[in-house]
Amino acid sequence: KFSNGTKDAISAKDISRKEPVGGVIALKESMKYFDADFFNDSKLREMENGAKEFNVPAFRENRRLVAIKDGGLHDPSVLVFKSSWSWSSKSKVKESEMFDYPQTSMPQRPSNDEDIAFMSIIELGELIRTKKITSRELTDVFLRRLKRYGTVLESVITYTEDLAYKQAKEADDLLEQGKYLGPLHGIPYGLKDIIAVPEYNTTWGSKTFKNQVIDMEAFVYKRLKSAGAVLVAKLVTGSLAYDDIWFGGRTRNPWNIEEFSTGSSAGPTASTSAGLVPFAIGSETAGSITYPAARCGVTALRPSFGTVARTGDKLGPFCRSAADCAIVLDAIRGADAGDPSSREIALEDPFHVDITKLTVGYLDSAEMEVVKVLSAKGAKLVPFKLNYNVESVQSILNITMDVDMLAHFDNWQREGHDDDYEAQDQWPVELRRARLVPAVDYVQAQRARGRLIREVQESFTVDAFIGNATDWELVCLGNLVGLPIVVVPTGFKSIEHPPKGNTRRRTTVTTGIYAPPDHDHIALALAMAYQSVTDHHKQRPPIDAN
Image: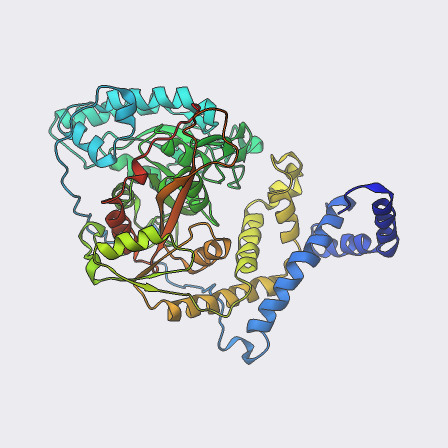
């Protein structure tokens, strides 16, 4: 990389002489053996440099870790073949019992839309159940807000208005017949636009796919429809589920409109934060729930892997509170024949977990206010550190994610659509580099992942721990191991460059509550305990005001 001036230009020429196009020619020839000789010289040079900088060091570290001795005896791959056909469509899976939701005092209907918009699911559900508001009226409120602020935040891809009013009418009609489906009955919500809904575009945030219609019902949509929820919008995903840039712009943070939301669940988090929907569903492979939730000050849950059938990815809710997250999780969890990785997990009821019986660790990165509050609530808080010897955590995730992504978008790359991608320094670079990951080294990465899982399990001597929600090492580790996390708003600080005069713009402060796999109820219970005596999660962002 050269900054300026003659000296730098000469250096560039010198390097060019020392490293002629021979490397590119050799790489171009080798790509023929992989039936992938469609890259131009510029892309091949980028791939060569990327492989040297990222791939090869990761390969060597994983090889050192798991491939030197024993032929894999002690470090088998986590890619395990299952001969059982138990996931076939003919199989019947017993569903877990529903949670026992807390009773709420009879809320009064607020006199203005904004107060309604920032009510919790539990409160809105009680208004509907007691017929103080109809689902149709509630749908009106949130569609008005979506249309007022959706363009400001660049958070909405498609308004599902006709479907919303149809589903709202069905909810109201059922209630008139004396049938109440539960706390999501008649509640509006949004879906990240990687989730298929018949007759509506599923764009994946990409200009290449912006007219795509996948004529099927995603599992999570079917679950929410069965619970009586009302879909009002398909919300922004960063292009092909990466960051916050999409074919229509870049999603903004309601707490500071000059800042972007991060992603890739950009629309769900920004819309929930701004009170455009009571809740939304996002997804995560590597930080796509935790990062935007932290940036926009939203409570969010990344569930244990397999808790919610993806027929796609790890799906989780963005909500006003941890209690709302628990309610949504209860509706969407479960196994689906289309997703062999999904499971019926016997979660305990988070509303009835006795936190005084829990030992909770806290990392150096934990927000100490959370530690003090949970200690005062009766939990046993202890200093904690995760001990593991795998040094290639981040590269294991990158190799796994990029190769898997390329397998899905192989044809997209072969046809040159990566040249049309919205952010050229993102997927195009990573997926070209993924072409240079040998199958052997992909499997070695999965063996190293298996060792990481075992080491984290042995080190996990507490019931849960508190730590930074956006530390990249923890994000990678949590996704590789399958740890559930609840992102919890814990306060605010001043923005770096405030506008003139008084401003309500803030930088949100959050923390993460992590639990072992399949123990989402513990993380949720601790988050609910914290939020029962704090109100950071109830604050309203200025959106486009000062």
